[in-house]
Length: 404
Image (cartoon, rainbow, N blue to C red):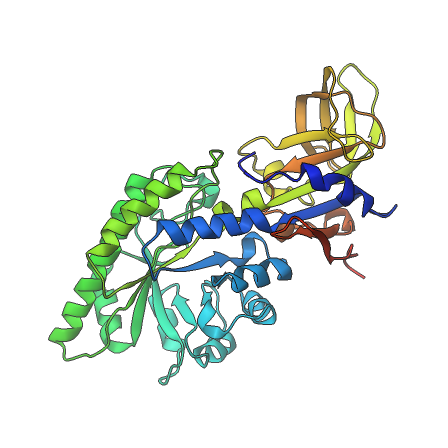
């Protein structure tokens, strides 16, 4: 686990909070979430504004926690804008990045003072009213390969996101015609080549200077005042977070040369992953030399893991009372509850011998799980519990049926 906080002491209390129908539980650890946010504050230049992607974990209590810590929220749909406001966000605390904004959504968000609204293509600008209250930004596609998995690489030449960096003449013309004051770039998720990403960030700063020089030559008074570098770093196993610290130091060096430009970030997975756990009761232990262990969470919660696996899940076996199980390991498969053949959380995994009524604790799953809950088989979303900064456990939301 990459979480320096342990929930071991809380597990008996958490298990005791489970009713008979609670075949699974989701747990959010505020301590880990705040730890990540504090590191971002410390590592990036003073005055940097950090937003966290709502889609990574859209639980309303999570969003309220992020806002209470002085961070902003990044919304990828109008529904996420509304959810952010419901959680207590003011317009100035929201970055709106949907690539398919309707005319009605644009009219609405254009009236919100301080909201950063990033266009996805230059033709989108024609939909904006003359008098804007929002901050207008342009998403730039740097056309790079950051080493992100193909499904999450959003800065290739074929990407559906952003205006190509190479299209500079049209970008310059648009910035004279429209009050664009922000440049935005999000290169991909789980990036592995940060050298390329840092080069792209440098180019984004250079583009800002080029735009403002061109504007000045045209007698235009608008200026770029914000550089939004998005997110995209994978969560780290090392509790010291050396990759993020090194990345932040290099970004800080770049930003220091442009003190008039405010820096914004949008880290999602890196911020959330270590702050979440899942518990699922063992319902059946199958026969066979490698038994299938049937549990109540599968591709409904772990959509990415089952359909597009990247790394194995971290699984621990608990006794029915919540204490960790020890003893000789056996090889088994962890089978989810959904009715298709691929719904396995793990195959040929070595775990202490598992019995009906035991629990499996699955660690580091705060990102892209609750937010990707699948309606396949119409299973209920589990009860969500939160662990606060003092280690106290409380219920954040009840078990929810869907489709009724």
